[in-house]
Length: 588
Image: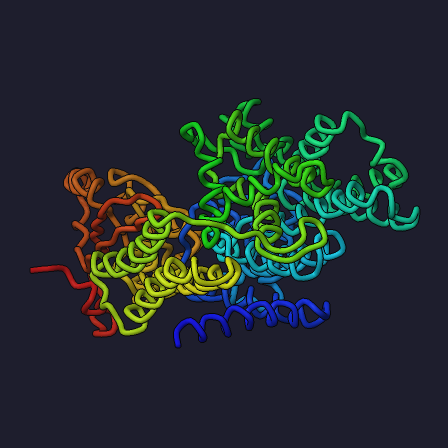
């Protein structure tokens, strides 16, 4: 009986994929619904998490408030090298929702959500004429399930939108290369102009990372073929003009920012050159092989298929599409291993569509490699895969318990489903097609993303210090309307949530600011508390009164427990509503 059910399920998966891919409109609807189901949970509920996303949101909000749409700024001044394209999209999405949404981080995440959906759609439409409808649809679905895209779709960063431009550029190159002998002159010109338009959009969104990817791909093909004749007839002169026209606001913004008297004076020439290659200068020292490892893990549901897919590509490398996938993936990852100063989260996703295509070619019938390949997985690999699912579910339960938050029924159910789906893949692998077995991993991965990125650590969790500080300030705003003073805690998220007029300082200077703004709250982090008390003792004025306390630990930034004491200048308001909520009362 189980064998019959599994056979029916196997046949149903194949028929379902064929039915979805049969019509482009139907496939598009399926892709959009899949992406929304994968990406939306957490976009609206998750508080500011990543420091870089908050900096982008602050720059976009500053554009709205100042009306200067060419020079990105934060509270300190001009931000050199920050791409204006993504800031324009973030500012516009927020402006459309009205001034009341300016301090809501989710409004700045909407362009990332849209960019992630478009990247998946563009991969399907760009590859369906090359790899076949079913293979292109599956590759798009696998890309949607990738770990890095799941994260970037939920963050106010340029990577998801830039990935959409990268997919258009790369699939246009693929059409020129794979179809060099069959494309009509008009089709070659359209593909060439589309490529250059995507290059211009990529520069505007995230500096020169997309052109770098395209150049590395072309170099990879040149090494394999010893020829670039396939680029002929694609109207590159007009395309270059188009790319320059689209991208021109970014270099203009770049030089205006340098000329502005307020940029960071410590930004070195090396840092500027790094910004030209990618829009965030970082000092991340990755261990050798980390980008290869992250590319493998990035396509989370297909970890067991990545190596067989690479073997398939290598065996069939005389075929144009396979040579193109090698040129897309290998040179880019090699360069990242050699020179990148940024974490894999910001860089690896541009190579994942190539790996997704390789996996899709492996497990579907297509015009390039023919029928799906039988993929053997040893027992130990399947056991490890089942343990991965168990580990994911257990980690979610542990994290929620560690945070001190209640482990709710939806969290338990999601953790259980994740474990079951990964274990199901391991169990059914030898008994059905690889495609059918992989669907269980896809389902388990989708539930795991929902579990980790939407359910656990809700906005009310004690593990979000900035959220809690903003909540406390809002509950006492009518009694203490002056800008808050924060000492010892300079997370960008606290500035974004509490207002750009928030004063960040040290414990020794906080009493001085409190004297100047007597109706402000002084928020002193524990590491600066002694300096604050010493500075208070040196002043002749009445000592500030401690009115509230809170603690928190953001596991994604500082990673350490932090305690805050909140002070106000006497006399304190007598109105009972000016007392802090019970959850922020200091222990006696």
